[in-house]
Image (tube, rainbow, N blue to C red; front, side, top):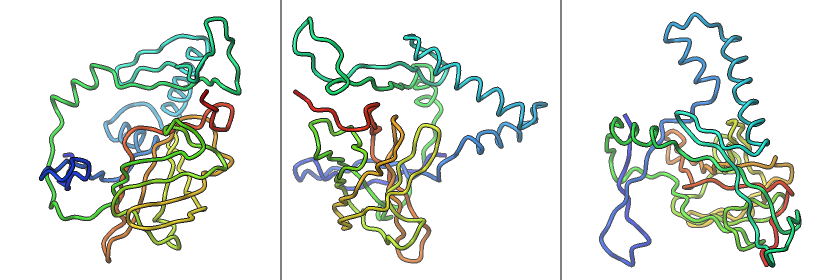
Length: 239
């Protein structure tokens, strides 16, 4: 069952409209997936599953780096090239151009979720972090995470207790590695300003804000879409 709540839509010019926000029950890691596979009575051991999955992920990466697209029952993998070229005869320049991983939900997966997902509405007044807009001040592309640079996040119910390690801004990589951001410069309900960790590995990240409301459990809110650390480790100049 997928829980959701209805919240006032802040971007409809004052119209009395609401939007649904999914209320996640947590984040499942690869270990959680393996645990669920073992619960289904497979004859494979945990080591067998880990070995197969490791080979599977490595092979997908190998095929992508060879210039292929990869289609699976869940997601399709590929790459795109970002940045502006000055003419038809311009060459790829790492200072102005970069290769970005592309991951899209497969049509079969989308159709299955659309047809079989069951939802359950929760109380509309249940507060939770609502990150809505990410801003990258170092460039024109607001999907870029600039390692070592500053960034801004706008939304509602964003404020959290920086002294509580369960709360904060978290960046979740594709391999489910979680990085908590320590450099928070501005921390209010409507806006967060923070420093992006300088040692982030290139790739795509999901941004999560976790905050505790009263004596209740910590609640999570996720920014729609993904953010990217480019291969060159900095935000490219857009000409």
